[in-house]
Length: 471
Image 1 (cartoon, rainbow, N blue to C red):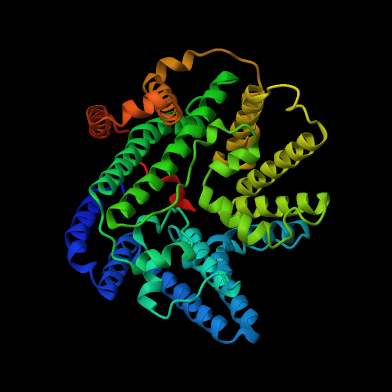
Image 2 (image 1 turned 135 degrees about the horizontal axis):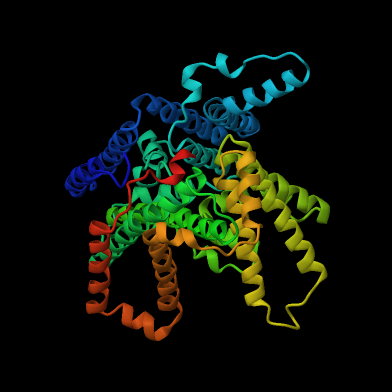
């Protein structure tokens, strides 16, 4: 069930009718959250509910055993990790592994059609599997590290694991932050309720008005409808940069808003990433819950930056490459992760050996270079094959300022301008004391969100699934 679908409107209306009556008692509250979350997830394919249940049971039991039998804790932790990685391997990476093995056998003159021999269920990607698997793994790892006491209430645990607002596309919620929230029946104040509604409106506006309209130009470009060069592909990639940002941030905002209406708090998942002045800064602003997950559970355990410069770079490469692989079982995602690793390494070396910031104000230059690197990186992410990556990059770096395509894409380009204006307006209202006060006045705020609602109703683009559902 998708946030931008009619069944979800019916679903959420029924949920919030029942919520005030059942949230007062702990187990009733947990039961409602679990049943609602299973209905929400099972709407796509009820068979994959067994994956969440199986993975959750393994981690719930493993955490209790880790806490009870500390001398054998590592065994239970390894069991938990192997089960979760195994599930990901079967459903997300079996096709990629079979394909690469086919290439190896073909190189050795032993052609074998391994992909054709895979069972049908292994070729179906359960929606959101990467999100809830990582969320479940972090629970047992934190219990092993003694940062969290395991819950003995299985309803409590599954309320955390299957919480429907963020179940299929994040943000990834940590058990140490959220389990204690679930224990409390918080009364939602009028201000909190209004803040939740505002987040939901912003989220729907970002997704249905900005992202879906920008997607028209981007999808046509990558489908080969147009074959422009030079500035055409730079505009396409700029549109995609805003499309994926508003698509994913839109989902996160809706999820955060729904949680606020229940009395819960999810941490911010995006912090205006396109104002970053370095790629490192970009990754502290983009998909924050995933970036910090990889930092805490991959980069730091590998040694982080404490074991010498070479090892620090190697750890970063491993982390970013795994991040690329997390996004999908296609070679382009792996290349995307390695590309970011390379740029981060170059950036780290340059900043360490050329300390120019103390002599000059290079913020504009740093921002320009960072945005350039990010836009080039999005080519690897959006392309569907290595051939398409080469085609798009060659088009971007072929000098051409012919803008005849503008006549065919006036509407998407107007929404591109609107996207820049929307993001700029938020930054101004956030950083200017005058505009911040003005935007919070009752009349201006009510008018602003009324305009956004009208835009959602009358300016929505062609309905598309959220991009991160595929991960």
